[in-house]
Image (cartoon, rainbow, N blue to C red):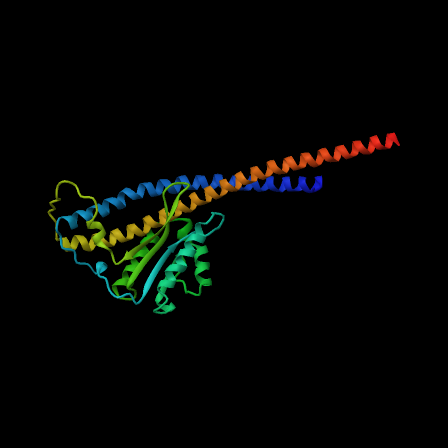
Length: 289
């Protein structure tokens, strides 16, 4: 059995660790409330834009846009969202593990034809270890989501797609469902799949739009706006999922520290009791001698 000094030192160490994890949990929880409010405020706007797009399609409007053109995939871009820091459970590890699967799918044309846009330092480090070149530094976006930065990234991807520099864009991120549940999500960003919009829920009446100046002009303005908003929404979604994962990880660490403290306290009391018993036996044995 460990000595009293060793057990006491372990109790002090675990107690200090518990204070740290408890404080980090409180900080992550405060950030989560802010991030959750941001994504909840943004989702209705993004859904309304998608609803407008759906209504245009259900009204029989012919959509012609370079963003919906599917072509042979010779060069692909993957935008992957993670965090800059660790201590958030399997949040980053799950993203990197699934990213490895995606990169293996597109390795056949050559590694130089797979462009990775990592949002977050952890995933950027993981991409470098896999031997792929990263396209730009987006660490600031992971900590402080900004619409302008997300829109700039979306615009860059759209321009590359229009100029045939890339043929497909995919997104990989954690979707925030609740504090305890984050769903790893893979989506095709470009080209836009309008068939999914057409199969959405329809109301009992068909929309009848009077479009000015023309449907082509409206869609030319609407589609890039939808794509920019989608990028910002995914960024907010991933940010909320990160804080939720860190809150849960620190809560679990704090609970484990509490359980370990109870076990160590029992061990300390047993060791102390045994030491006192041994001293009493020595005293009684000495007096009898």
